[in-house]
Image 1 (tube, helix red, strand yellow):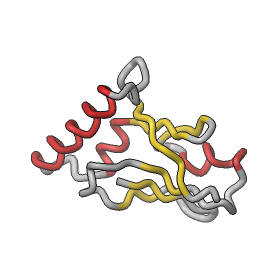
Image 2 (tube, rainbow, N blue to C red):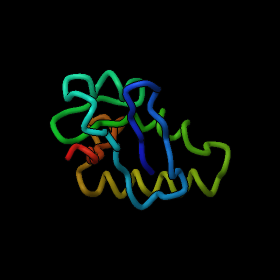
Image 3 (tube, rainbow, N blue to C red):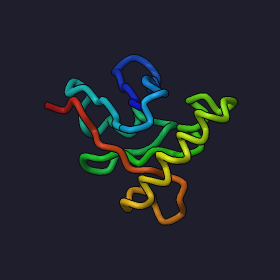
Image 4 (cartoon, rainbow, N blue to C red):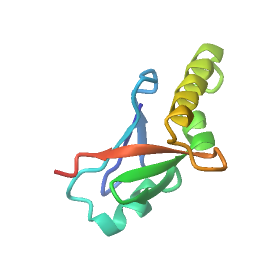
Length: 100
């Protein structure tokens, strides 16, 4: 699953069926101080990672597909086992890519 940021549009969720990876593609032309604004309302940026709202991410996928939801919950569970969820369990950490 990937969140694609741009300078002209809202964030776009792509690859919703790929629940084995999660990243935010943040092209280098977006200044670092504008990344959180470009990612809203899906999450915030902190350093070289993003914190993504789990409920909004689920809603952007296929929330009416039970099999997809089970896979999504598995992805979130894996993230929790690695310490990649915030203490409240409402945000998951993802790498920022494309900053080169």
